[in-house]
Image 1 (cartoon, rainbow, N blue to C red):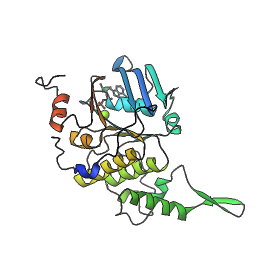
Image 2 (cartoon, protein in one colour; image 1 turned 90 degrees about the vertical axis):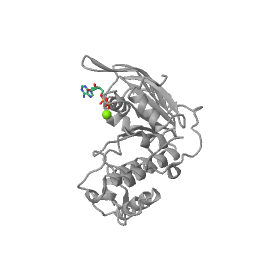
Image 3 (cartoon, rainbow, N blue to C red; image 1 turned 30 degrees about the horizontal axis):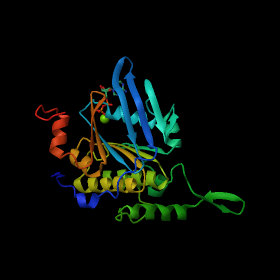
Length: 271
Ligand SMILES: Nc1ncnc2c1ncn2[C@@H]1O[C@H](COP(=O)(O)OP(=O)(O)O)[C@@H](O)[C@H]1O
Ligand SMILES: [Mg+2]
């Protein structure tokens, strides 16, 4: 029986099975990574399919954030190949990854405090309309679409797209960033500990926006040190140890306690 502490699993149910007969949205093929002379990733092979959440877990320093940064174009593998929808790719910068629809959501970086909600939502993708011969910002349409995208994800507390972003809770910020990725047709969503420092209620909202992104067909790679957050939303859980994948566990095959023991390397569990 999987225990999920205070998170309500029935609100988080995943629809349907992942179709692994198609090309993975993203693939690491025998990837190694070193910082200077310090090798931290060893021969990692990992695929994320469309509509799949891969939970990446492991002890501090295992290399989780480094792997995510390789997916996001922030770090280049020392050796090995990246593939996007079956085709080899070579990211020189995060912009290369973003151009293909890979969105990374970090704790604080995803949205800009000084801008209000709709400005954040449409940052870099502003809608315009023609007034006579000139293009002007279509503020009304951006306000309307921002509110409807947020309310579709259950962020109904938010009444106005003019709300300043600094007034949002940590969980609402994460959900806005995830909703934004979803809305603009991202293919792969990368999340590095998005629930750190969130309340139970906020965490539930973030987890439900992850599930929503997945059910709409995005591939998601999700890092969290809290196993009771990872287990309800992950289709597969990948356990990383000293830069190597040591286990890949299917949904439903592990409990919170077992996973915690695996990470802590309790000797009584067979590997
Ligand atoms: N920018 C960096 N420069 C040098 N070493 C780094 C850097 N980032 C991470 N490391 C090292 O790489 C290893 C893996 O770190 P990281 O990917 O952050 O692990 P995790 O996210 O699982 O805690 C650690 O030994 C860490 O000290
Ligand atoms: Mg990390």
